[in-house]
Length: 402
Ligand code: SF4
Figure 1 (tube, rainbow, N blue to C red):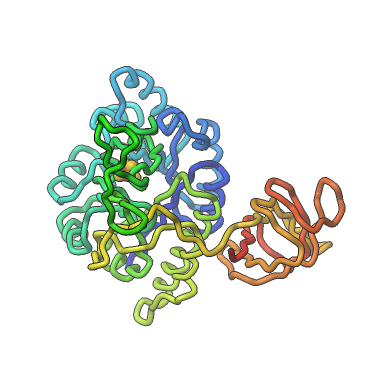
Figure 2 (figure 1 turned 45 degrees about the horizontal axis):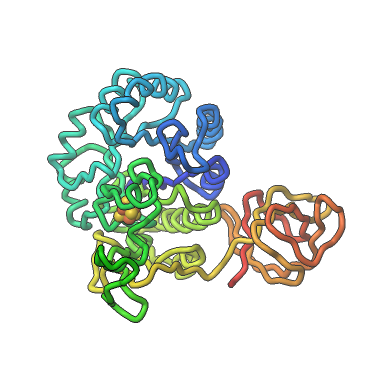
Protein backbone atom coordinates (compact mmCIF):
# COMPACT_ATOMS: atom_id res chain seq x y z
CA UNK A 1 0.00 0.00 0.00
CA UNK A 2 1.39 3.38 -1.04
CA UNK A 3 0.25 6.46 0.88
CA UNK A 4 -0.02 9.39 -1.54
CA UNK A 5 2.06 12.50 -1.11
CA UNK A 6 0.34 15.46 0.58
CA UNK A 7 0.95 18.55 -1.53
CA UNK A 8 0.34 22.00 -0.05
CA UNK A 9 0.18 25.52 -1.49
CA UNK A 10 2.93 28.00 -0.58
CA UNK A 11 1.83 31.53 -1.50
CA UNK A 12 4.91 32.95 0.24
CA UNK A 13 7.78 31.92 2.53
CA UNK A 14 5.69 32.07 5.73
CA UNK A 15 3.00 29.82 4.28
CA UNK A 16 5.57 27.42 2.85
CA UNK A 17 7.42 27.03 6.15
CA UNK A 18 4.07 26.61 7.92
CA UNK A 19 3.00 23.84 5.54
CA UNK A 20 6.29 22.01 6.12
CA UNK A 21 5.85 22.18 9.91
CA UNK A 22 2.27 20.94 9.69
CA UNK A 23 3.17 17.85 7.67
CA UNK A 24 3.18 18.53 3.93
CA UNK A 25 5.29 16.13 1.84
CA UNK A 26 5.66 18.66 -0.96
CA UNK A 27 4.89 22.31 -1.70
CA UNK A 28 3.92 24.05 -4.91
CA UNK A 29 4.78 27.70 -5.39
CA UNK A 30 5.32 30.34 -8.05
CA UNK A 31 8.27 32.53 -8.77
CA UNK A 32 7.61 36.24 -9.20
CA UNK A 33 8.64 36.11 -12.82
CA UNK A 34 6.04 33.69 -14.15
CA UNK A 35 3.59 33.83 -11.26
CA UNK A 36 1.04 36.50 -10.47
CA UNK A 37 3.11 39.64 -10.86
CA UNK A 38 0.47 42.08 -9.73
CA UNK A 39 -0.10 40.29 -6.42
CA UNK A 40 1.83 40.36 -3.18
CA UNK A 41 3.54 37.11 -2.26
CA UNK A 42 5.27 34.49 -4.37
CA UNK A 43 8.99 33.87 -4.38
CA UNK A 44 12.04 35.72 -5.63
CA UNK A 45 14.61 33.33 -7.12
CA UNK A 46 16.83 33.54 -4.03
CA UNK A 47 13.79 32.70 -1.86
CA UNK A 48 13.08 29.62 -3.99
CA UNK A 49 16.69 28.61 -3.26
CA UNK A 50 16.13 29.16 0.47
CA UNK A 51 12.94 27.15 0.65
CA UNK A 52 14.42 24.33 -1.45
CA UNK A 53 17.25 24.10 1.09
CA UNK A 54 14.94 24.06 4.13
CA UNK A 55 12.49 21.64 2.48
CA UNK A 56 15.11 19.17 1.29
CA UNK A 57 16.58 18.94 4.80
CA UNK A 58 13.11 17.84 5.94
CA UNK A 59 12.57 15.45 2.99
CA UNK A 60 9.96 17.79 1.46
CA UNK A 61 9.81 18.45 -2.29
CA UNK A 62 9.37 21.81 -4.03
CA UNK A 63 7.37 22.13 -7.24
CA UNK A 64 7.44 25.42 -9.11
CA UNK A 65 4.54 26.52 -11.31
CA UNK A 66 5.46 27.87 -14.72
CA UNK A 67 1.94 27.26 -15.95
CA UNK A 68 1.31 30.61 -17.56
CA UNK A 69 0.22 30.69 -21.18
CA UNK A 70 3.19 32.78 -22.35
CA UNK A 71 2.79 35.13 -25.28
CA UNK A 72 5.51 35.51 -27.92
CA UNK A 73 7.17 38.42 -26.13
CA UNK A 74 7.69 36.28 -23.00
CA UNK A 75 9.40 33.34 -24.69
CA UNK A 76 12.92 34.79 -24.62
CA UNK A 77 12.91 35.21 -20.84
CA UNK A 78 11.91 31.59 -20.20
CA UNK A 79 15.24 29.79 -20.94
CA UNK A 80 17.31 31.69 -18.32
CA UNK A 81 14.50 31.28 -15.77
CA UNK A 82 14.27 27.53 -16.40
CA UNK A 83 18.06 27.21 -16.13
CA UNK A 84 17.96 29.03 -12.78
CA UNK A 85 15.26 26.68 -11.48
CA UNK A 86 17.38 23.68 -12.44
CA UNK A 87 20.39 25.18 -10.69
CA UNK A 88 18.33 25.78 -7.54
CA UNK A 89 17.43 22.07 -7.43
CA UNK A 90 13.62 22.31 -7.55
CA UNK A 91 11.88 18.95 -7.76
CA UNK A 92 9.51 19.70 -10.60
CA UNK A 93 8.20 22.34 -12.93
CA UNK A 94 4.42 22.48 -13.32
CA UNK A 95 3.55 23.65 -16.83
CA UNK A 96 0.65 23.74 -19.20
CA UNK A 97 1.95 25.12 -22.49
CA UNK A 98 3.60 22.84 -25.10
CA UNK A 99 6.10 25.59 -25.89
CA UNK A 100 7.16 25.74 -22.24
CA UNK A 101 7.37 21.94 -22.24
CA UNK A 102 9.81 22.03 -25.15
CA UNK A 103 11.87 24.78 -23.53
CA UNK A 104 11.94 22.98 -20.15
CA UNK A 105 13.23 19.79 -21.79
CA UNK A 106 15.96 21.82 -23.49
CA UNK A 107 16.98 24.22 -20.70
CA UNK A 108 16.14 22.29 -17.52
CA UNK A 109 16.55 18.69 -18.71
CA UNK A 110 17.05 17.13 -15.26
CA UNK A 111 13.82 18.48 -13.70
CA UNK A 112 10.72 16.24 -13.78
CA UNK A 113 7.82 17.93 -15.55
CA UNK A 114 4.27 17.99 -14.20
CA UNK A 115 1.29 18.91 -16.35
CA UNK A 116 -0.99 21.53 -14.82
CA UNK A 117 -4.66 20.93 -14.17
CA UNK A 118 -5.30 23.82 -16.55
CA UNK A 119 -4.67 21.44 -19.44
CA UNK A 120 -7.85 19.63 -18.29
CA UNK A 121 -6.66 16.06 -18.81
CA UNK A 122 -9.80 13.91 -18.58
CA UNK A 123 -8.93 10.69 -20.45
CA UNK A 124 -6.11 8.14 -20.39
CA UNK A 125 -5.22 8.58 -24.07
CA UNK A 126 -4.48 12.23 -23.36
CA UNK A 127 -2.48 11.14 -20.29
CA UNK A 128 -0.49 8.69 -22.45
CA UNK A 129 0.10 11.44 -25.01
CA UNK A 130 1.57 13.76 -22.39
CA UNK A 131 3.64 10.96 -20.84
CA UNK A 132 5.13 10.25 -24.29
CA UNK A 133 5.90 13.95 -24.61
CA UNK A 134 8.02 13.88 -21.44
CA UNK A 135 5.53 14.58 -18.65
CA UNK A 136 6.14 12.52 -15.49
CA UNK A 137 3.00 13.57 -13.59
CA UNK A 138 -0.43 14.82 -14.57
CA UNK A 139 -2.50 17.03 -12.32
CA UNK A 140 -5.89 15.71 -13.36
CA UNK A 141 -8.85 17.93 -14.10
CA UNK A 142 -11.14 18.38 -11.10
CA UNK A 143 -14.04 17.38 -13.35
CA UNK A 144 -13.45 13.61 -12.99
CA UNK A 145 -15.39 10.97 -11.07
CA UNK A 146 -13.85 8.33 -8.80
CA UNK A 147 -14.38 5.67 -11.53
CA UNK A 148 -12.81 7.82 -14.21
CA UNK A 149 -9.72 8.41 -12.05
CA UNK A 150 -9.50 4.67 -11.33
CA UNK A 151 -9.73 3.93 -15.04
CA UNK A 152 -7.03 6.51 -15.71
CA UNK A 153 -4.81 4.74 -13.14
CA UNK A 154 -5.38 1.34 -14.79
CA UNK A 155 -4.55 2.61 -18.25
CA UNK A 156 -1.42 4.67 -17.70
CA UNK A 157 1.79 4.54 -15.65
CA UNK A 158 2.27 8.29 -15.44
CA UNK A 159 2.01 9.75 -11.90
CA UNK A 160 -1.43 11.12 -11.10
CA UNK A 161 -2.11 14.09 -8.85
CA UNK A 162 -5.61 15.19 -7.88
CA UNK A 163 -7.07 18.16 -6.04
CA UNK A 164 -8.64 17.06 -2.74
CA UNK A 165 -9.47 20.33 -1.05
CA UNK A 166 -10.30 23.95 -1.82
CA UNK A 167 -12.09 26.26 -4.21
CA UNK A 168 -13.54 25.03 -7.46
CA UNK A 169 -14.17 26.72 -10.78
CA UNK A 170 -17.49 26.91 -12.54
CA UNK A 171 -15.41 26.55 -15.73
CA UNK A 172 -12.98 23.72 -16.50
CA UNK A 173 -10.28 24.64 -13.96
CA UNK A 174 -9.02 28.09 -14.79
CA UNK A 175 -10.17 28.00 -18.43
CA UNK A 176 -12.08 31.16 -17.85
CA UNK A 177 -11.59 34.82 -18.57
CA UNK A 178 -14.16 36.25 -16.15
CA UNK A 179 -11.58 37.45 -13.63
CA UNK A 180 -9.19 38.72 -16.29
CA UNK A 181 -11.97 40.58 -18.09
CA UNK A 182 -13.56 42.13 -15.01
CA UNK A 183 -10.49 42.86 -12.85
CA UNK A 184 -7.40 42.37 -14.99
CA UNK A 185 -6.38 39.51 -12.70
CA UNK A 186 -5.55 36.49 -14.83
CA UNK A 187 -6.71 33.05 -13.67
CA UNK A 188 -4.07 31.59 -15.95
CA UNK A 189 -1.42 33.33 -13.88
CA UNK A 190 -2.79 32.15 -10.55
CA UNK A 191 -4.34 35.55 -9.82
CA UNK A 192 -8.05 34.76 -10.14
CA UNK A 193 -10.31 37.17 -8.20
CA UNK A 194 -13.01 34.46 -8.15
CA UNK A 195 -15.33 36.77 -10.04
CA UNK A 196 -17.64 33.81 -10.67
CA UNK A 197 -18.69 34.10 -7.00
CA UNK A 198 -20.00 37.62 -7.35
CA UNK A 199 -23.65 38.58 -7.45
CA UNK A 200 -24.90 38.98 -11.02
CA UNK A 201 -28.01 40.51 -12.58
CA UNK A 202 -29.22 41.34 -16.07
CA UNK A 203 -29.32 44.95 -17.29
CA UNK A 204 -30.70 46.08 -20.65
CA UNK A 205 -28.06 48.30 -22.27
CA UNK A 206 -30.33 51.34 -22.80
CA UNK A 207 -31.57 51.26 -19.20
CA UNK A 208 -28.41 51.40 -17.08
CA UNK A 209 -29.07 50.86 -13.39
CA UNK A 210 -32.34 49.00 -14.02
CA UNK A 211 -31.77 45.47 -12.92
CA UNK A 212 -33.90 42.76 -14.45
CA UNK A 213 -35.35 40.92 -11.46
CA UNK A 214 -34.12 37.35 -11.78
CA UNK A 215 -34.22 35.53 -8.48
CA UNK A 216 -33.24 32.12 -7.23
CA UNK A 217 -34.11 33.11 -3.70
CA UNK A 218 -34.60 36.25 -1.64
CA UNK A 219 -30.87 37.06 -1.84
CA UNK A 220 -30.81 37.20 -5.64
CA UNK A 221 -28.85 35.07 -8.08
CA UNK A 222 -25.43 33.53 -7.77
CA UNK A 223 -25.47 31.71 -11.05
CA UNK A 224 -21.80 30.77 -11.18
CA UNK A 225 -21.23 30.05 -7.51
CA UNK A 226 -19.54 26.78 -6.46
CA UNK A 227 -19.13 25.02 -3.14
CA UNK A 228 -15.62 24.07 -1.99
CA UNK A 229 -14.11 20.66 -2.66
CA UNK A 230 -13.36 18.40 0.33
CA UNK A 231 -12.32 14.75 -0.07
CA UNK A 232 -11.18 14.04 3.48
CA UNK A 233 -13.94 11.41 3.76
CA UNK A 234 -12.47 9.53 0.79
CA UNK A 235 -8.89 8.82 1.96
CA UNK A 236 -9.30 5.00 1.68
CA UNK A 237 -10.66 5.29 -1.89
CA UNK A 238 -7.85 7.64 -2.89
CA UNK A 239 -5.17 5.28 -1.53
CA UNK A 240 -6.80 2.23 -3.10
CA UNK A 241 -7.14 3.88 -6.52
CA UNK A 242 -3.40 4.54 -6.37
CA UNK A 243 -3.19 8.28 -6.99
CA UNK A 244 0.30 9.60 -6.27
CA UNK A 245 -0.39 13.02 -4.86
CA UNK A 246 -3.22 14.79 -3.03
CA UNK A 247 -3.21 18.51 -3.69
CA UNK A 248 -4.65 21.26 -1.50
CA UNK A 249 -5.76 24.37 -3.40
CA UNK A 250 -5.08 27.87 -2.08
CA UNK A 251 -1.87 29.82 -2.68
CA UNK A 252 -3.86 32.96 -1.86
CA UNK A 253 -5.19 31.54 1.43
CA UNK A 254 -3.73 32.43 4.85
CA UNK A 255 -0.98 30.57 6.74
CA UNK A 256 -3.65 29.57 9.26
CA UNK A 257 -5.76 28.02 6.49
CA UNK A 258 -2.75 26.11 5.16
CA UNK A 259 -1.79 24.91 8.66
CA UNK A 260 -5.29 23.69 9.52
CA UNK A 261 -6.00 21.91 6.25
CA UNK A 262 -2.56 20.31 5.96
CA UNK A 263 -2.76 19.13 9.58
CA UNK A 264 -6.20 17.55 9.06
CA UNK A 265 -5.21 15.63 5.92
CA UNK A 266 -1.83 14.64 7.46
CA UNK A 267 -3.60 13.18 10.48
CA UNK A 268 -6.14 11.34 8.31
CA UNK A 269 -3.44 9.87 6.05
CA UNK A 270 -1.25 8.83 9.00
CA UNK A 271 -4.19 7.20 10.76
CA UNK A 272 -5.10 5.28 7.62
CA UNK A 273 -1.49 4.18 7.11
CA UNK A 274 -1.31 2.89 10.70
CA UNK A 275 -4.31 0.60 10.45
CA UNK A 276 -6.17 0.58 7.12
CA UNK A 277 -8.47 -2.31 8.16
CA UNK A 278 -9.98 -0.45 11.12
CA UNK A 279 -9.74 3.10 9.78
CA UNK A 280 -12.56 5.54 10.15
CA UNK A 281 -12.16 9.32 10.09
CA UNK A 282 -12.55 10.81 13.59
CA UNK A 283 -15.09 13.65 13.75
CA UNK A 284 -12.52 15.91 15.44
CA UNK A 285 -10.42 15.85 12.26
CA UNK A 286 -13.35 16.59 9.95
CA UNK A 287 -14.49 19.39 12.25
CA UNK A 288 -11.07 21.05 12.03
CA UNK A 289 -11.86 21.88 8.40
CA UNK A 290 -14.86 23.96 9.52
CA UNK A 291 -12.58 26.19 11.54
CA UNK A 292 -11.15 27.89 8.44
CA UNK A 293 -12.93 30.24 6.06
CA UNK A 294 -14.68 28.14 3.42
CA UNK A 295 -17.85 27.66 1.42
CA UNK A 296 -19.96 24.62 2.22
CA UNK A 297 -18.03 21.49 1.31
CA UNK A 298 -18.94 18.84 -1.22
CA UNK A 299 -17.05 15.96 -2.82
CA UNK A 300 -17.00 17.54 -6.26
CA UNK A 301 -17.18 15.36 -9.36
CA UNK A 302 -15.30 12.64 -7.41
CA UNK A 303 -18.53 11.57 -5.71
CA UNK A 304 -21.35 13.88 -6.84
CA UNK A 305 -24.52 14.06 -4.78
CA UNK A 306 -28.01 15.40 -5.45
CA UNK A 307 -27.15 18.47 -3.37
CA UNK A 308 -24.91 19.51 -6.27
CA UNK A 309 -22.14 22.04 -6.77
CA UNK A 310 -24.16 25.22 -6.58
CA UNK A 311 -23.95 27.47 -3.49
CA UNK A 312 -26.67 30.07 -3.30
CA UNK A 313 -24.82 32.94 -1.60
CA UNK A 314 -21.44 34.57 -2.02
CA UNK A 315 -20.56 34.35 1.68
CA UNK A 316 -17.98 32.21 3.46
CA UNK A 317 -18.45 30.03 6.55
CA UNK A 318 -15.98 30.11 9.43
CA UNK A 319 -16.34 29.21 13.10
CA UNK A 320 -12.88 30.30 14.31
CA UNK A 321 -10.41 33.14 13.71
CA UNK A 322 -6.65 32.94 14.14
CA UNK A 323 -5.39 35.45 16.72
CA UNK A 324 -1.69 34.64 16.96
CA UNK A 325 1.23 32.49 15.86
CA UNK A 326 3.87 31.19 18.27
CA UNK A 327 7.33 32.30 17.15
CA UNK A 328 9.36 31.10 20.11
CA UNK A 329 9.10 29.60 23.59
CA UNK A 330 11.00 30.83 26.65
CA UNK A 331 11.49 27.65 28.69
CA UNK A 332 12.85 29.51 31.74
CA UNK A 333 9.82 31.78 32.03
CA UNK A 334 7.24 29.33 30.69
CA UNK A 335 6.08 31.92 28.13
CA UNK A 336 5.38 31.71 24.42
CA UNK A 337 6.36 34.64 22.20
CA UNK A 338 3.31 35.19 20.01
CA UNK A 339 2.95 37.35 16.90
CA UNK A 340 -0.60 38.70 17.08
CA UNK A 341 -2.72 38.34 13.93
CA UNK A 342 -6.10 39.61 15.21
CA UNK A 343 -7.29 41.44 18.34
CA UNK A 344 -6.83 39.42 21.52
CA UNK A 345 -7.85 40.29 25.09
CA UNK A 346 -6.59 39.04 28.45
CA UNK A 347 -9.12 36.60 29.89
CA UNK A 348 -10.19 35.30 26.44
CA UNK A 349 -10.37 31.57 25.83
CA UNK A 350 -8.23 30.35 22.93
CA UNK A 351 -7.47 27.04 21.28
CA UNK A 352 -3.83 26.25 20.56
CA UNK A 353 -3.26 24.14 17.45
CA UNK A 354 0.19 22.61 17.30
CA UNK A 355 2.05 21.31 14.25
CA UNK A 356 1.75 17.52 14.32
CA UNK A 357 0.31 17.86 17.81
CA UNK A 358 -2.97 18.26 19.67
CA UNK A 359 -5.42 21.15 19.97
CA UNK A 360 -5.55 22.38 23.58
CA UNK A 361 -7.62 25.02 25.36
CA UNK A 362 -6.15 27.96 27.27
CA UNK A 363 -7.51 31.04 29.02
CA UNK A 364 -5.15 33.96 28.47
CA UNK A 365 -4.03 34.86 31.99
CA UNK A 366 -1.58 37.59 31.00
CA UNK A 367 -0.11 39.26 27.89
CA UNK A 368 3.17 41.17 28.10
CA UNK A 369 3.94 43.38 25.11
CA UNK A 370 7.49 42.70 23.92
CA UNK A 371 8.17 46.33 22.96
CA UNK A 372 6.91 47.78 26.28
CA UNK A 373 7.87 44.94 28.61
CA UNK A 374 4.51 45.56 30.35
CA UNK A 375 1.27 43.63 30.70
CA UNK A 376 -1.64 44.79 28.51
CA UNK A 377 -5.36 43.95 28.53
CA UNK A 378 -5.78 44.08 24.78
CA UNK A 379 -3.46 43.71 21.82
CA UNK A 380 -3.85 44.18 18.05
CA UNK A 381 -2.34 42.65 14.91
CA UNK A 382 1.42 42.76 14.33
CA UNK A 383 2.43 43.26 18.00
CA UNK A 384 4.47 40.61 19.78
CA UNK A 385 3.37 39.49 23.23
CA UNK A 386 4.58 36.97 25.78
CA UNK A 387 1.84 34.69 27.07
CA UNK A 388 2.34 32.18 29.92
CA UNK A 389 1.40 28.69 28.69
CA UNK A 390 2.68 25.10 28.78
CA UNK A 391 5.49 24.27 26.31
CA UNK A 392 4.39 24.70 22.66
CA UNK A 393 6.23 24.39 19.37
CA UNK A 394 6.99 27.33 17.08
CA UNK A 395 4.32 27.73 14.36
CA UNK A 396 1.59 26.72 16.85
CA UNK A 397 -1.52 28.84 16.15
CA UNK A 398 -3.85 30.47 18.66
CA UNK A 399 -7.47 30.79 17.55
CA UNK A 400 -10.75 31.93 19.10
CA UNK A 401 -14.31 30.89 18.43
CA UNK A 402 -16.30 33.74 16.82
S1 SF4 B 1 -13.51 33.34 -12.04
FE1 SF4 B 1 -14.30 31.45 -11.12
S2 SF4 B 1 -14.52 30.02 -12.84
FE2 SF4 B 1 -13.18 31.68 -13.54
S3 SF4 B 1 -11.11 30.93 -13.14
FE3 SF4 B 1 -11.74 32.11 -11.34
S4 SF4 B 1 -12.60 30.58 -9.89
FE4 SF4 B 1 -12.51 29.64 -11.95
